[in-house]
Image (cartoon, rainbow, N blue to C red; front, top):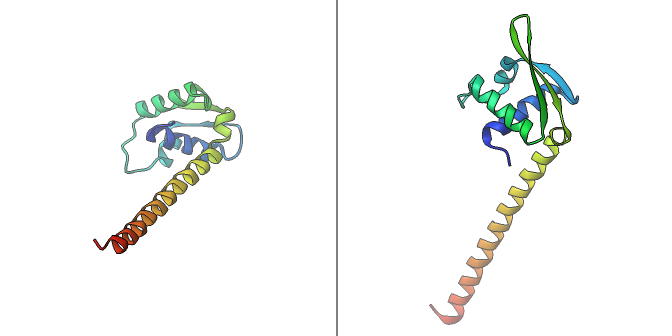
Length: 120
């Protein structure tokens, strides 16, 4: 399971690759898409990209273009399926919340029935 930082970086990389299996992007491009409320640094971005590479989501090659650091990113099978897995994870969370609400409601109703039967 990805950390919040890794998830944000993977979402940004997937968005920048725009349906292709690879892209050439700068750290500034990635940083511009990341949520502004969280303080991301270039070191934290590098760590997240390395973690995503280790987990098999993508391959990263660092290079220089006109003095600017660039990343050559190739999405692997897990990286290409990222959006589908993210959607499935959200559906699973909503399903668990729904089951919890149904369980709480059933418990409440059962408690009222017992209270009415035994006159508590």
